[in-house]
Length: 149
Image (tube, rainbow, N blue to C red):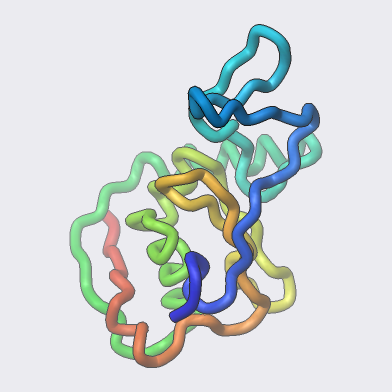
């Protein structure tokens, strides 16, 4: 299947406004004198740069947060929905709702509608996905599709 991205996604940390330094001895990330971060910095989902984008991401996260899964089934055939669930679940998230609650809505490719980048659950690193299908037929049955109230 290939590295952490499930078939070619590139892993790299998102650039920050201030250059952090990593202390190998303590495992801490120092942002500025006196500031210490031990977890990845939270960023809003789709690389939100304007206030309007940030507000939209927050609204989407809030809308998804109130829903609860009532059932689950495995995917049988590939669809665009299965592709996006594969990308989210391959990074360790249960579903889009869980991801959006922490990071906001993920970036998507405009031409295909597929998810463009997702943060990994365990590291917080960003994994970039291709514009085209990455969930091969042999992985389709691993994808869980949740039904909501």
